[in-house]
Amino acid sequence: MDEGRGGLLSAGGILSIIVGAFEVIGGGVMVALVCLRMPLRLWLLTYFPRFGGAYSMADVPLWSIIVGGLLVVLGIIAIAGGFSAIRRKSFGLSLAGAICALIPLNLLGLLAVIFVSLERREF
Image (cartoon, rainbow, N blue to C red; front, top):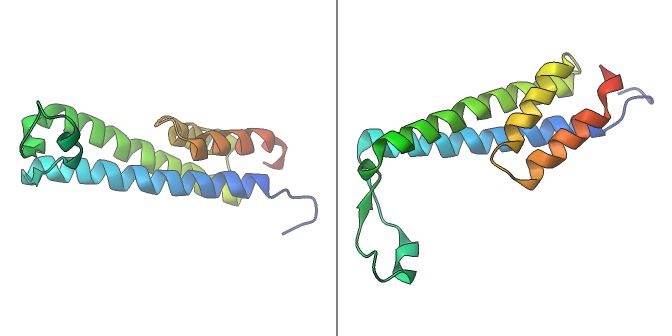
């Protein structure tokens, strides 16, 4: 790595890859639970006594498939953008990947957008 190259772009790319991997895994699990009609016990429902029992993700298949599929697509774009940022190939793809990492509204995605934006001159 050259002296003139900053580490913020690499950090932004790595953050995009990490968040993208979580998006792909989370979205894939959501879609898989719907497709396999596996029961999902919501342990949090013990705190809400009016909503008791075991629920199945198949009770809300359309929304779960839409949200899960969207998360998978956003995660793939975030991962591709992260690799683009690390290799310093395309600023547009890197920024798009960082924004896709930001869409689920998390701190790592916000940091990825900031780091990639600050290092535009590296491309």
